[in-house]
Length: 211
Image (tube, rainbow, N blue to C red; front, side, top):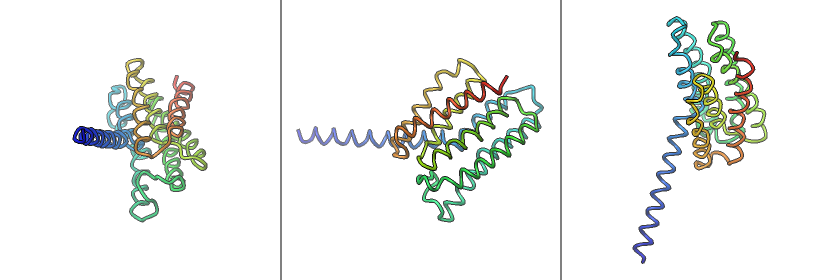
């Protein structure tokens, strides 16, 4: 009996470790600074109507404004001891990165607009600005999940580009949200609110601006 209980306990422990590492992997792959790389790539690179040099210029602007600047700034804050982790676990640590992120996204939006990027790319960049502003406003009082907001916005953009074939990918929204809860980075409520911002606000804006 004791051996059976010990074996069962070991199996539960192993399962918890597997779930934990899977959650770490999901959070890393679908992080707010990795998702834009995939999203703007699938929106831009297959488009044969854009000259190659301009396509790569637009893509580079998108990467710089949504990924490289903000991730570089957070790494700088971590190395200088101004934040405790790259995940910005404390709500109070998120204000300056949010400000840098919004400023970077605004510049990116203006740049891709002037470069005459495809409407979906241009207005998705605009969504990065508005969604981040809303999340920051809420985060002044309550730590909303940026991961959840990001994956929600991404799948909406994919749906606008590829239609109903993207439907199965919406399962990523709860998967990413659950991973954040398992890792104790957010509460269920913070994940749900973040997901709704990403899904609903992005859908409303793209519906209005993308003709």
